[in-house]
Amino acid sequence: MTAIEQYRKNLQETLDRAFDTQADKLEQAARMILDTLKAGKLVYTFGTGHGHLLALEIFYRAGGMAAVCPVLDEKLMLHISAAGSTREERKEEWVEKLLRRYPMGEGDTLLIFSNSGRNAVPVGLAEEAKKRGTRVIALTSLRHSSSVTSRSPRGLRLFETADLVLDNCGIPGDAIVAFPDGRRVGPTSTAVGAALLQAVVCRVKELSMEEGVDARFFVSSNVDGGDAVNDLLVEEYGDRVPGLR
Image 1 (tube, rainbow, N blue to C red):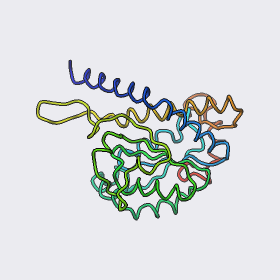
Image 2: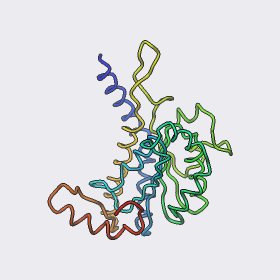
Image 3: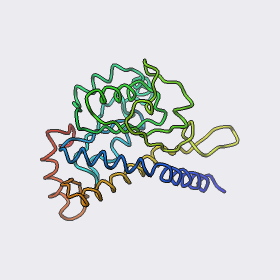
């Protein structure tokens, strides 16, 4: 079996495990988000490092919800300084800065992505968001997070702070293909996380139709008529979602 085949096999097993074990929680997540849309509130998304890829996964996306606001700062992402972002995500003072720009509150939902769930910024943001009445959904690896200590000043990990926890069923260290030199390659957190997120979005759409909720969704800008649909949504949400326009 080549490494390509091994990764495919291991990834499929991880995907199956995640969908099988998290089915009830995926349903809960969809219903929490639908409640947010019913109330005319926003779904905030946040992750540091590679977690910000998931924060963008359901933002301004073909088939994606319009009421999504990613919580972004370049210093917590990878394209300015990858190593620097690792240092920054351990500094809790970021929480106040982020909340000044993204004033989440009562009725909103915050999705936080952190595979390890140990760093100060995602943990602190979850804590402060809950104090403001925002419901927090965490997507993390329970096996990884349970195997490490917290870097939060209060000693908490993300799964210990969120209202709802989705387990991506990844292993400690994330990478799932082992090599004879002792190294592991092939992380699963982004692939599995994206699949779980999009499944939730699909269920939100389904529930919105069943319950007659006027939930707005983007279409592809690269199909005929797509720009006309999306332009209206950008106009509707542009003042509330930084970076949408």
